Amino acid sequence: MIPAGPPAEAGPIKTHPMKLDNRRSLAEFLLLTVTVFWGGTFPMVKDAVAEIPVLSFLGLRFALAALLLALLAGRRLGSLDARGIRRGILLGCLLFLSFLFQTFGLRLTSAANAGFLTGLNVVWVPLLAGPVLKKPPAAGARFGVGLALIGLLLLTWHTPWHLNPGDILVVICSIFIALHVLGLDALTCGYDGRALAFVQIATMAVLSLGGSLAFEPSTWPTAWSATLVWALIITAVFATGYAFWVMTAFQRLTTPTRAALIYTMEPVFAALFSVVLAGEHLGALAWAGGGLIVLGMVAAELWPVLTEILFARSITTGQK
Image (cartoon, rainbow, N blue to C red; front, side, top):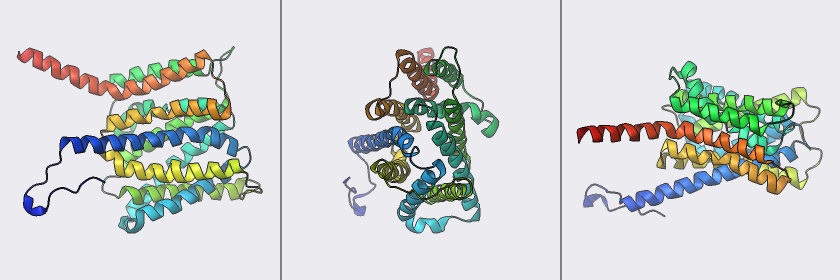
């Protein structure tokens, strides 16, 4: 527990730099655990949707996660006005589409590929910020896209080369994730994060269960294997409820760039879990392609920071 500081009569509270470093270290460690759970879900979900229809699995996952987020949000749920609820529903629709394409894609491609290709959202964000938010992409974003596209070519290399349907679906998923990230930037100001998170996840649960009732032969599992139960627990409790809580409560204790760089570990953990848990094999070209995708993600995030550092040094040198 972090000390609350001196009593009020002692004057203004000054937080010791060491305490700030400790809080940031804790926050960044917790964010890293989120990427571990995210990465671990890829092989789990791939196995689960072999036993249960996709929309049925998503509906059960998000219904359970919505209940957990309702408990976390508590009274904050009443803070949303009608406009806030509409914005939460819109964001939930974007997030639902991302999970829909990702989960259907997982049925047709490897969990490792899905992990790396999902991470492309970090590269799409600065590119889509131009037409969506009127923020033209920086040079770093273009460089990151170039690396990521080369990585995509290597990761999915076949002779003759082609993208299999699963890879295409996951790439589309990454675009919807990027749109969701941009939506969070444009639509969430002034609203409680936990309350908005609940509306988004509840929207996803309703869409998934409604879609399952309309388009799938069964919505409720006929058998509850250990694989399915654990997949629901991990994805709902840890990869959704816990993840949203950590991001809401702790991401503010670090910088956006450091947080984004931590999130680039998701595809790395996805590949590792896919090899260890699912027995998938990645050749040298696939590992090189995955590495280039991660490098492109890192370049897109670090470029503005490096530019600022170089600019500051040039000014300092000029003053001397």
